[in-house]
View 1 (cartoon, one colour):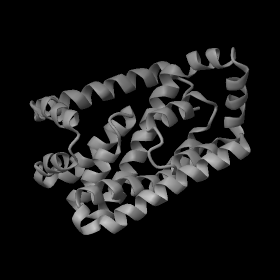
View 2: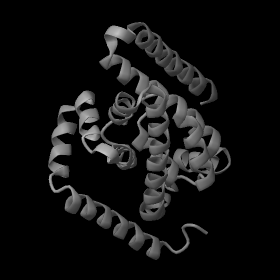
View 3: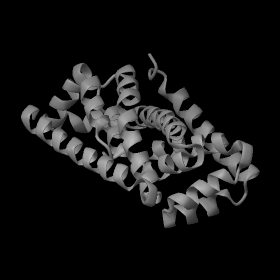
View 4: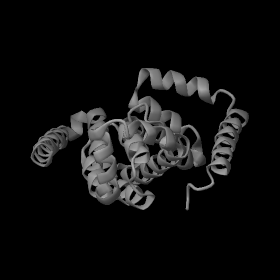
Length: 227
């Protein structure tokens, strides 16, 4: 039902994106240039300082920025999640990044499903392996996406596109992303935070990195076993 009237949905999407970027340009004329320079350097501390410079609006700004770039899938979400922890503290920052990343993933799903699902379906049917996976995603999409989301540093853009271009339901995608993103976001944010604060959090940084490596090894074993 959600995607039946795709013509109207496409127009709404385009209008929302246009209004958002126009509003940002009108309110903060130098926003895009400043942000581009920050992203090129990739400095987490600089990003946190830039977000904090918006004063009472910094919480909302950090949320929107994390949503937008998680929806795009680039640059890595860790830059924003770690910056949130430096600004608001470890637990509040992780919670903010978790919710914002989930919202961004949902927006990305809606965009891909609306604009590209029909074209993707035509290509999928030409490749037996893709067609088989596409069929499995309808019944097992929740489990597949949940496991993939649990793995830290798994390319978010790829997961967003795969979920949207498959037959996975919107409900399964949203719920699995919401649940699966929390541990992955927490790990990424903690590594970014502790890397900046290595002098006082060196032991925890080592522990979290070790946990990430074990998670990757576990996923590899599970994937090899389940094919």
